[in-house]
Image 1 (cartoon, rainbow, N blue to C red):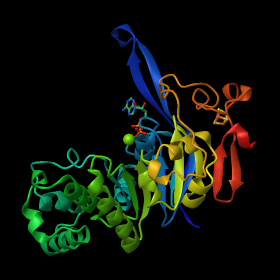
Image 2 (image 1 turned 180 degrees about the vertical axis):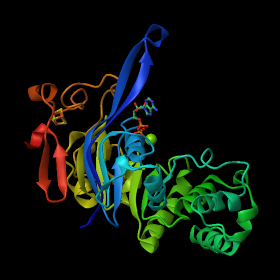
Image 3 (image 1 turned 60 degrees about the horizontal axis):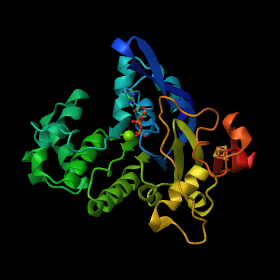
Image 4 (image 1 turned 90 degrees about the vertical axis):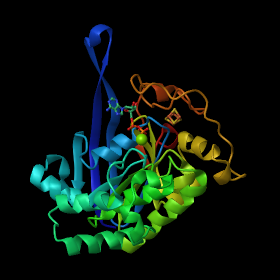
Length: 319
Ligand SMILES: Nc1ncnc2c1ncn2[C@@H]1O[C@H](COP(=O)(O)OP(=O)(O)O)[C@@H](O)[C@H]1O
Ligand code: SF4
Ligand SMILES: [Mg+2]
């Protein structure tokens, strides 16, 4: 399979001021040397509890923030792109955000919202603009009447359709969807998930689909990466991840979703709170919550172990 994105040793440190008068500068290590490939045409799910670094990873691989390491897109390091090359890249790679209430400008009509990216990229011919806007509005399941309306006139699900239309209007090939259904009613979530899946097929997209909810990524993803405090702790094809989860954290996540928790699988409860990302546990970061913790787990960072060609895990139980 062809690699569209290759993420190499990606690190992100956020400066966090602390102490009296913010004198001591500290850093939060949000991405801990991530390595990950995204294949052309796949939907890669990225899951983990809130605060583990999913959005940071999504933004980093679109250069919306500047991490350390490399992000190769079609073999070119986008982190080294100049303004002009970056603008070309922005046409090809887009992001859909979690909150369709804050991500759409309330003063703009849907028409203006969809027109803006086209104009920024030099399409000014009215006929061409209108044609493309009409195409995309039908593609996301809305209609021409909706173009005159303002974001507040729509429901959450419809707003997310508008946000998806905006992300797709320049015909990108890569989409980062960052919790695109997390702000929506459960009854609406399935519609948007189905829409994204259809669009992915129709438009030949490659998608990184981010969610804190394993139940959501299950029905959508070809492969799934499980994240914990800045690390990818397990990466697998979807089937094998659910049939044969390896990492204790993945097992706990699966146990916590009743609808996908198979009876034969032993239940594993996640105990304790997520440690502070400001001050993460040493070595295996999961050792403070892991039921299988061994001596070595708090002393050394586990290596990534290959279980099969499409399944790997970062845990001492398998090395
Ligand atoms: N701009 C920022 N400045 C400082 N810390 C941040 C910033 N953005 C995110 N963080 C912190 O980095 C960690 C990862 O955040 P994020 O990537 O948003 O996680 P997730 O999307 O998985 O919830 C969290 O501890 C969060 O508080
Ligand atoms: S390395 Fe040790 S603490 Fe970490 S997940 Fe594996 S068994 Fe648990
Ligand atoms: Mg997030």
